[in-house]
Length: 89
Length: 169
Image (tube, rainbow over all chains, first blue to last red):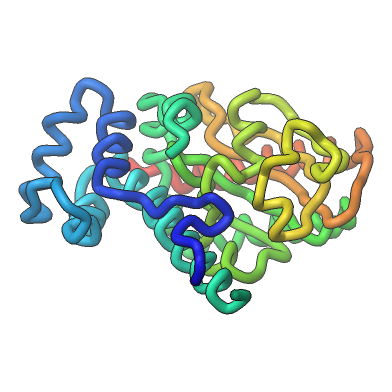
């Protein structure tokens, strides 16, 4: 069995994406978030829409693109470290 | 996730300033790799980075000596990145031995990579925000000199001049 939080790193969720978009867009956050959900075709609940949401963020304004980049780095780090942990177990 | 840290890093004006640069241009990466390689060589360190610290992750723009999953992801979670400290203080940041430094004892990145010492200087944008850092990292405990700091300062100045040439209109 291997950890789902390798080295304490938690896989980002839809809630984390929402928090990030609201954080970097400040007062404009709710409007930007609603637009991203529409573009991704998701209601923001559940985790199955996270990939589509990040794709929509990559195609949006420059600040949302950076937000997507930061989340992608965390997702990739989580995937890579989970694999490493699995190999070591 | 580490909400307080991410709020401190995710100041909208700072993120907007970072977003004003074309960070994905391959020529920019090549040039920043050369700056990292030069600093690593002069300071005799195995790893050097030029990076920006976003709200939740460090994004590596140019590097020397980076391998494994960090090279694959081109970044590190912000709470693990030593450059996060450089960005938050806005001043040069030095770690002589992370394994014996109370500020970094609980950082799993040091445990997993074996990296121990760090010297970083801020990359300050024209808007006055600290966007990222230029740093060297070593696998041995190390006391860095004023000359090392000057080399990094020179590299950071060159990196910011380059970045300014890649500002989006």
